[in-house]
Length: 246
Image (tube, rainbow, N blue to C red; front, top):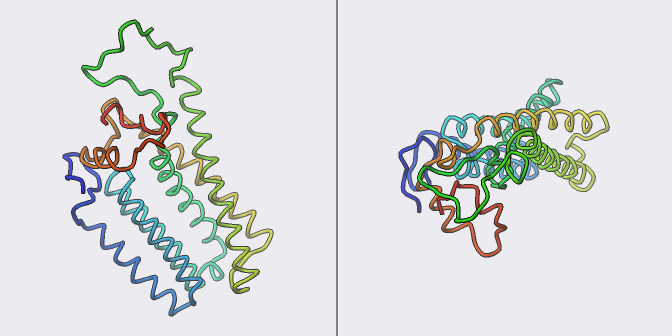
């Protein structure tokens, strides 16, 4: 387990107020089953998993709490059939949920592309004989330093949205026709997912890592991940997202 750091952000070995949302998510899994059957409970179980991902990977407690609220609302509104009663609510929730997913994707990917503009830590020196980095050769700066990671995040988030829509169609076809699908519904959901993905990528890149590692993440959590999640099978680009703190 990690040791809570001095910076704001979730630590894995202590409880805090936002964890009440995760307890609520577990309760709503059972409540969704009672209200709308096991498909709704399965969707709420995915929401519950997303809540824990928010605790482990995202940028601080306020974002954790807001992200939980979005995911819980999206799952519960589906269970009680509110999307059928309020026509615009589905698009709004798809946009917000996609934004949260994009922020999570930025943390989960940990690609070197997402550390655009990173500079060496204080006291670090380049290897002897190594050429100084320039804006035009191998450095993640300028136009590509923003556009490339943004495109990666948008593509990943939209792809996850497509997988979700495919799951809805499979559920409608093989489980219960109560799961709403249709041309207009699917295209509207995907459009909302795209908007949320773009917004999420913009937020993720505007709060990208500082030279000393991720902003607003506890140092203990960084050491926890570098010790337990990065192994021999992790590409170098994925393993270098903590600004040299290994």
